[in-house]
Structure formats: structure tokens, C-alpha cells
Length: 433
Image 1 (tube, rainbow, N blue to C red):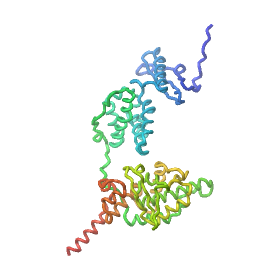
Image 2: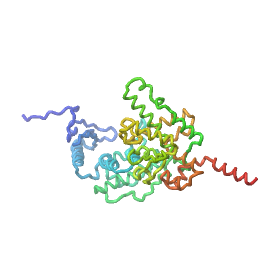
Image 3: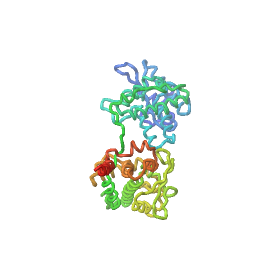
Image 4: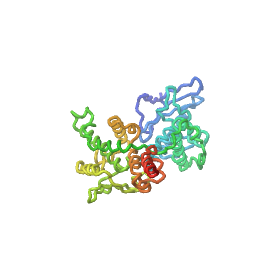
């Protein structure tokens, strides 16, 4: 009597290279009458992927699933991608790593990865009880579907309708540069079907943000009031009650965090540095103190959003002294404003932004400054630009903030502040009388 191989239990963990096709139970869909099989495959790198195979005939179901499993294993071992390979798998193994290793700014990488998620319909905001609102997402499409311009168009237009024009445009860039371009490199396609195409994304967007007509700036009184308040603020006031009386290491960390949000705010208030620029400053090479006690900080081109290097002064001597004192207080810190968890490491944009958001909301409530309810660190660039415009030329201010005159005029000047014009009109009227 021939020996029989004992069927493995369905709960047995799959080893690398193994699949569950032979132990999975097929079923027939009531509506389509197709036979279905849900199965899993563990790739050589240990990652578990789940797939569903369908067939008109029961006898063809498992062979079809095995062929797909072999294709996925061949791809994982460096084999060729085919037109029938799944787009979601290609994005996960090719497009996503390409973006992550692109050398782009962290914020751009984050935006592009977000666009990839929207293309695949991975959107918590629009996931409804009855299904995902991204009905035209490309998650279950094969690579060959990327030749279908109409399919891509519906996907991008739906993103525009649900998320606005800018995110749809980013998704189109990602689609072209990190999906189709990579497919051309893998010789799956020999052309870009959406190059030069106009998908009318702006007109499909349900809500388009109005053109930016200027930044939001604090008044001179609110600016000075905030500056004085922060210079005298005891960081202890910001330490949560849960760490004040126990857990010394947590209390120490929270105290460093409190000092950091205060000092980062003061630094930006008196230099106009972007938050990424301020967090990138190191004591060696970026901070200098002259004989008069003035502190200057240098922004390297690679630190700047516009790739323009510049050197600016800390405009308030009290803030300059406070910043300089951090070096003695935290001698092991490489960065001027280091991570509160580890002062020798850079404070990440995401972590610092989360803390600054809470801090600005608290400041708005405490000082009764409504602008800080919605504005964040860019408010200081607009404020300094607006307050200094009477005394410093536009060219000099543009160089200080590291952008063009046009950008300076459009995005960093509060055009609702008419005080300078009113003062000028008083002079004119006085002369006329």
C-alpha cells in the first residue's frame, strides 16, 4: 500500500518558499459561479503575502494558483517581472524602495509615499462602511494595465475629486516617474503612455485652495509680547503632571522637550529659519559668535529648501545668549536643537512638528493670539518680513530668508497689514495741509 503524505495543519507556520495552496479550501462564488481560492506565500525574505485565485473550473484552480506562486518566488529571487505581475507587488518591491532611496528631502519622500498609497486606494479618510471610496484605485490591477490611459486617468481624477488638485498632481508625477519609468527599466513597457497627457485634474478637483496672496504675520505688539513671554517662561510649566513627581528619566526628557520647543521658537522668531534648517544646525560649522557677542548661524545649501546657502544673525541679543548657553548645558549635543530623547541626534521633522503644534495651540490660548491656532513655524518668516519691510530692502530681505523676491512678495508678506501705508499717507496729508 502506497504511503500517503500527511496534510499539514492549516495553522502551521509557512517556511520561506512555502505556500498554503494545497491545504486551502476552495469555494464557489454564488454570483459569478467562479471557483475561488485564498492562499498565502512566504517569500525567501520571510515576508508573508496573501493572494486570491479564481477560475471557471475547479480542476484548474490549484494549478493556476501554483503558477502564480512560482512567478512570485521567481520575482523575489531576482527573476523577470511579467505583464501579468500585480501592480501592488511591483510598487511595494520596486517603486517604494526607489522613492525611499532617491535622496529627496524627507518631506518630499513622505508626500510621494502618500501618493503611492492613494494610487493603491489605501486611504483611511475615505474608507467607508460599505467599501473604499477610491473605486478606481489600481491595487488589484496587473502591470499590463498601466498601458491603459483611461484607467490611469480615472484613478488620478478620483484622487483630485477626493483630495484636491495638488495631491492628484503629485500622484501623476509618482505614477510617471516611479512606476512607469521603473517598468520601462524592467522592459515591461517601452514608452510612457501618460507623457504629455492633460487629465484636467484641476477642473475635477471639488475644492481647490485659493491662490496664496501673502503670509500671515503677527502684529508688532503680539510679536514683542510673545518674545518677552518666552524669554521668561519656566520650562517646568510645560512638563506634564505625570512626570513631575516620579519616573526621573521621563521627567528629564520632558524637561528637555519643553526647553527645546521654547528655544526652537525663539530661534525661528529671531532668524526666520525654516524648521528643517533650524533642526539641522550643528555647533561645529554653523554657529559663530563675534567679538561684540552677536551670534550668526550659517545655513548650508543642502540644508535649504531652495538650495541657497546663507548666513543670518540672531536678531535679539537675549535670544543669542540663550542659544549659546545651550552648548554649555548640553555639551554632548551635536545639534543646536537636538532630539529631546537623545540630544546627540537630530530632532526629526515629524517629531518636532508634532510637539510644536501642541505648543503653538497652548501659546494661542495662553497669550490670546488667534493666528497661532492655525499658523505654525512659517509665521515668523512672514512676521519678520513684514515688520522689517520699512527698514530693509526687498532684495536684502529675500536673501536673508533664502528665496526669490517674487516668492518673498507672494508668500512671506502679510498684505492685510496696512500700517506702513497709513503712516506714509499721514506724512503726505500733513505736507498737503
